[in-house]
Length: 291
Length: 329
Image (cartoon, rainbow over all chains, first blue to last red; front, side):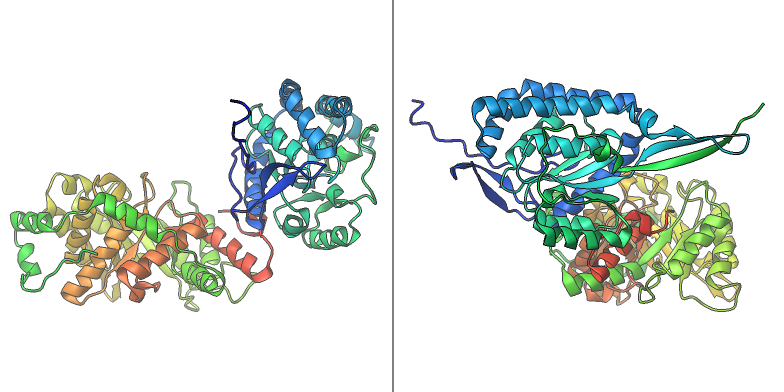
């Protein structure tokens, strides 16, 4: 019976505004495992999907950035919990995508969940570390506090499909930004699985939008989009021509740009604060001291 | 498409309005609307794909058709001045961007709008001033109050009057009362040397059936309306594609019967460029290309204009624009 069973061939969709739409273009592409065997079809995002994702992210921004940091921490921690529940699925996806052995793939999933928990913990500690009570020459309190930048486009790393993905996504949203993420082209399945986790956890629709497809096609539209406030070019690592083109396009509305590294970093290292501070603005408030 | 044929019947439209009974006989004698068919046709017309140069034309036409509207209790002279300035130059960064057709305000703010639009009487911007009158939006007031409301707006400088019909009278079948009210308001639209166009609002969201929309359309056209308009924007559902299609059919049939053209104005709920283009396709297909003109078709809208401008900027610059680059209103 099981021998004769016909395969359920999956065609995954995008994740925009908390829903799973097909690509507006109608296209999908074949995703193979590291040996070249068919795994599934993934939606091929077009520029219009990027446009819709930006609209969803912009809509979600006021309420997400207006939540208390403590609440954002809880939401991210809940994502880690649901990921933990789906361990076998993530282990399989990482194995298929990256060709790791079972135990190594488990290690990657562990590290990804731990990274998410680590970032969740930062939500209500960032202001203390990055902000400051500045001494000024007058009877004023002078307080600098970090504020989220806005809608951030994120190009996820092409090689590290889960740990790298979490390591670029979590620092963007933990501080109150909303994200439009373009997954790895050849290894999109962990991102698709993460989308399913996000849909079943407490992340409000539109806070994280996941597009599967080619960064080279979609990213120029995000980089030139006047309603995107920042862009993380990690996914263009090693492709200096694309990275340069995106930086030029991003200059039009003075986007914050987190530049592409020469090669993908070692994701197991301590990320430090830079991935979070890259997408923060500093607001300084003067307040009379009173009596 | 069903067309109401007047050939051989020899309708005498003046005869139809002789008495309440005759008017009811006439309006109830209009062919019924096939609800499923109307909705299917409206949906089918909404699937047309309008791209590149055709889209650029549609965007400019839609901007020229906008009645830029603010009808809120919190309207201030400052807000109306800002709105009027925006109507004259919707995109200050692009001189090729056309002006809108009109601004639509409450009667007490007509003077403020006129001051801005004519630069204190020094020149004519070409943007009309529409005023809602006759106890907008409910229409529940005595006739002499409605007429005074209208006369005030016209004297203050309104070029167009948007009146509401008495839906209570219409729904209880007192058609002649509605008819005579429209006739009286139309007369009040002429004050001395000034004469304003009359738009008649049905509030289709309260008329319950498509048959009633068709009847109201004929009733208003017989009473001399220059424009028929779907909604006040205060009741949901406001303008929808099927309702607008039925009104477009009515004006098409009216021209066939009498030779006169009447305009159509959907208002309320049209927020995106995509929606606006669906309406333009429908105007072309149902009423005909003669209606693709700001004199004969308008959009009552406020947020629509920003979306049109963002799409226009996208076509011009090749990159997506955002709400940071248009005014908040």
